[in-house]
Image (cartoon, rainbow, N blue to C red; front, side, top):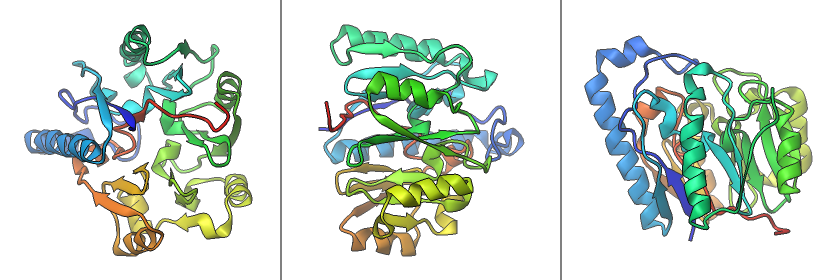
Length: 283
């Protein structure tokens, strides 16, 4: 049973801008409706995960920290080890104590074994920039926008897993999870322009052409790549007819849950979700 961490959007809003998706002025024009849409979308996402057999642990929201809802950023968990985030932007650094407390509680309950931190000067924004690939026995990491290149070495040391750093060059795709989605069969859905030339070469050298799926532009621009794969089920905020046909042709079931209010912060299904039960193939 997949074990996921989510946090309700009780205090979610777009009140600052730290990526190109965020426009506080546009949010304020229709804030009440947008918050209600966020609330409804979050509940629908949680319900869909539970209908697919997942167990969802809920992390309490906190007033003044609207992006706490994006649990993927607070840490990455593998083999019951936790590496905590260190946020680059001051608008999010106050989220760190909330994440620390939550994982200390999970450790006390026996849900995780150890909690680790980045060395001084290294920034790391959790599973948003660290996608574990058990089939290839590696972790894909994003760097260049929010997370530091140096973070990859810490992840490799803590988890004893090879890391493959991918440089992100487009500020619209500021975390790896916005432009790179790993499926359970080893396929990778990605948006090539988000990566440096070297990054694209690394991806193509490790993922066979038959497993690489280039996301249509409309999917990338609607944050459809920011999706969660649970077995043969893919939970997405958006899916074009072309991408749906591609995924269904490979034996996946597509579940679309509209998350438009979260898109206004640059987030979607993956951002709102942290996997707590990930295991490496050598564990």
